[in-house]
Amino acid sequence: MRLANFSLVFGLLIPSLALAEQVGEVDTVFKWLGPNHKIVVEAFDDPLVDGVTCYLSRAKTGGIKGGLGLAEDRAEASIACRQVGPIRINGKLKDGDVVFKERTSLVFKTMQVVRFFDESRNTLVYLVYSDRVIEGSPQNAVTAIPILPWPVAP
Image 1 (tube, rainbow, N blue to C red):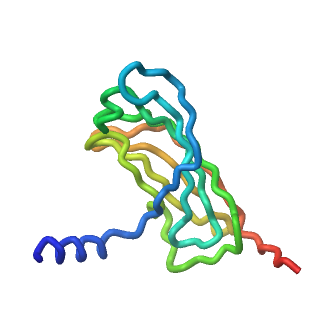
Image 2: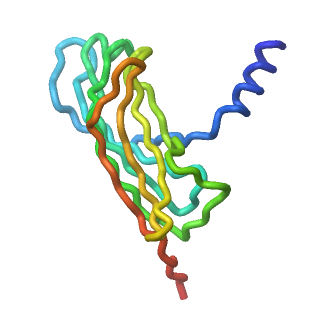
């Protein structure tokens, strides 16, 4: 019972993050044992902004370690976010809010997407980068979506 209560309280304290849906993948290196190295493409919707979907491509390490979840994935990623419907902001946006986060090593490394709002240009900006407990990576990618009216079908 205590564990259930702790899980509920802990879940309420953590901001909601988007869940990714895999769109596709391609193999990049054949491995005799375990899965191949690959690039995966995932899609996720911004949990606070209706009408925005982001597409993230990133490397996944294969082999025996990759198959067991013990390998460390590379820090490189690419992102493209698009307006897919009328944009509606549900709540207060804070610059640097984490929209998506995924573990890319057993313990120390994560890949995350953060959102900024460029108010003077009325544009949402999304940044993907990888970080580590000790040292992060300067490799990153950015995409921007101007907030425009969505045409209504006749």
